[in-house]
Image (cartoon, rainbow, N blue to C red; front, top):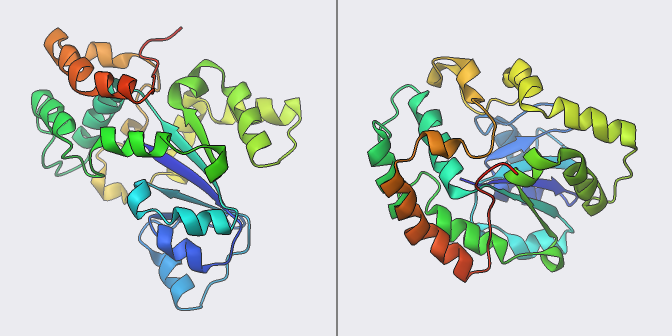
Amino acid sequence: MADFGIMHSGDRSEALMLDWFLIDTRSGRTDLRGQLTRQLQEGQLEIVSPRLMRTHLAPPIFPLEQAKTKSVKIIHISRNPKDVAASTYHFYQSIYGAFYASDWEKMVDTFLSGRMVYGPWLQHVIQWKKLGPEDNVLQVTYEEMKTDLPRVIRKIGQFLAIQLSDDVVNKIASACSADEMKKCVHKYFIMDKVYLDDESKYLRKGVIGDWKNQFLVAQSERFDEEIEKKLQENGIKFQYEPL
């Protein structure tokens, strides 16, 4: 899976089209069940700019042209597919009633066949990676953030035209560390707690290369042949191990 952070500066109609997670940056309210979206549709709620939205939409169904017209800034975050598969497997295992991640081998087959909840990972990433500054899209990888988070924070600040002092950058980097985020999962957990048997499992390790503790050699080779090869053909490179 890949996550997309969106800072929106247009009117409220476009917010309805992104529809998955909507965060009122003034009050800190998060739209977990579409409540904020419904209130917007019914004219009961006005969220002023700037506001933040997160979505898993792929480019073919994302309102990209409308976003560009309204000067929406899009941050596309991606991660190497092996760590994505391993992380997703453990996440699904932590959810009550996980219906198709009953064993790791099945998860490997599901991931490679593209039968994931948000669609084929490979197609999703290739489509987003084709977009760049001319589309108001900033590309960021999970591995970049783990390797040098302050540098990425400065890059995001520049992209959003926000001046950040070194002190602010360091505070953001500290608050966004895995250890600090584990202390406040309740602030950004995106599902009802009934679906998670232990809230602490929502953030597991937050490292690069943990896939090595999950993959068999043959499974890693399958990923290299069926995914990594196609990524390279499209000029996309990921970091699979810590530097």
